[in-house]
Length: 412
Image 1: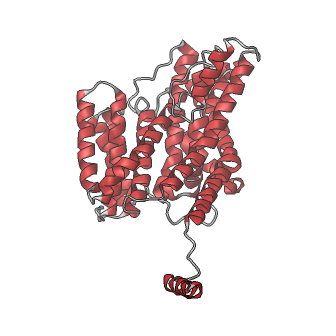
Image 2: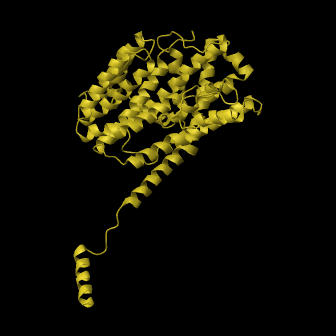
């Protein structure tokens, strides 16, 4: 079996689904359910986060074996990480544009941003603290750079993803790879959230569908006229926006879930059959079509509705953010590294071990950090709403006026 054979990818996913089918993981289930959630998206998230982890794991093989941090030219694995991240951006845009559409472009802005802060921030801070602790462990708990420089670099890391200038901490060159550099994407999530204050105007003016179509067309034009892969990010966000606008207007395929699943998988299969990068008009269009179908009800023949898929979806942020920690810690252990590099079969087994450790850790951090802070954010939002409610006067204006007239009589 070659290292870049496609089959091990699906074996790893199947094994993790079997793991999360165990009753022990009931604690990551949602309590009482949430009617506002899109179950197909929830089922998709975990597979996306794990795909990014496997993508980085295969790049890590090149580094461990050859000292080069480069992706392979394999058709399936080369674009895998980028495709997963594009779908994450589409999910973000779809969910929050839908939220604005339901409120006619006038949501509770304070509640929205409090919710995002308490959703993104706590686990992000935890991951940076863990990374910093690992750095100091690897540097012998000795100060190896000027204190002011280290404080400045730490400040960048702790900026909740708003600053992606990820400098080494304490002179440790491997700093960025402890988390596999995944924090870069959070900055663009924040930019999207901040942009909603302006783009909501198009919803208020009943021009949201026009805005989505024109924005996607302009984004495709940018991709065609620029060289940087980053210019595909606006197109990904606009695919999510357009999907939300279309479904809000009731524009969706009149097909069964199975037929839509076939079409979604076909679009992805075509994309993976020729693309060695996710960054291209055709690639983003095919990914966007698959995403639109999934949001319309394509559950990939029931896969996205399975309880293990839903559970992995709940912990997907932890899987994404913490993926580098088991990869780096386990491969810093010389015997494990030697065993993993012995053969492709050993390496894929090592990736499965890393993925299982990662998923268990993400489950624990979800229950101990993410869920409590999400609830805290919701509580603060509810308190703010109660405080904003105006207390009705106990007396009507007419009764107040009559009392004033009586007082004037007494004065006379």
